[in-house]
Image (cartoon, one colour):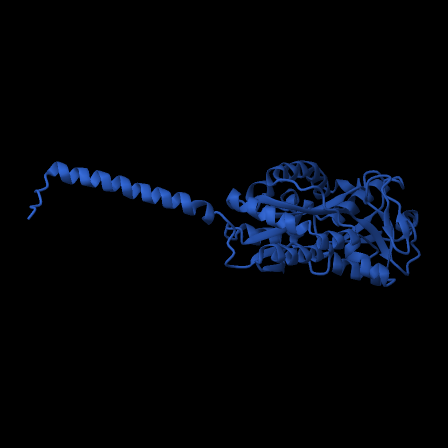
Length: 345
């Protein structure tokens, strides 16, 4: 029979050192194995995409096309939620306060990214409180008037504005949106007195223009296409760069505002998907890869092309952050001039 030798204090100390090292090694291995997995978007719950504009507009339609394609790519369900108001601030604040786990994203445009330049205590700084995930699309806006009005050209619009007591009214998708900025730029360039009437998205604004209660609107082609086709709105120009032609069935190629003598009334709206600022970079990169694949699927691309919504070459989230910062630096002075009332001077 073997007799177990008595353990000395040195034996006990040695045993603890060996087992402690083994335990630390197992824990480290577990962290190494589980770390990256935990930094992936959670697929246990649907992806929530908060759209900063009302249903029925171009961005809402595009977001729903993207959601369907993303589900086909990943198998994960998507909930599209419209939170219009405040030039994108309502949606932005809702997502800023969401868990930074890749489960909630917001769709913002240039104006929404620059809203803190116009609104006091807006509650967020897009360049600091969000991480860009994906550039979605961009497009010039077109200028529309009621189909039954006497206005058939921009010159007709200018003449009407000079003769109408109290000036013309123009609708917009909301404060600090592309439609708002363009209206103010037109007022400054033409010397007209224009009254801003903000709405919660392009769809309700277009409805009011079609009835004649509002005189004009700068909006995306996709947002007003159905009303143009139905004979309720008339397009008279686009805000694309000089020499660019936007074809509208039944109206041919629209002239640009720049070609008509208003080079400052040029503006492309772009929309970006953003995540809360503390979202891990690994999560953002995974979302970017899957959403980019969905955006560039043949079905989505074909549908967006028909709506004159341009999808540019894929850009990394890091490069998008630089683009957003540059855009804020460019657009903020324009918005500040609107805030000071300089647009009409």
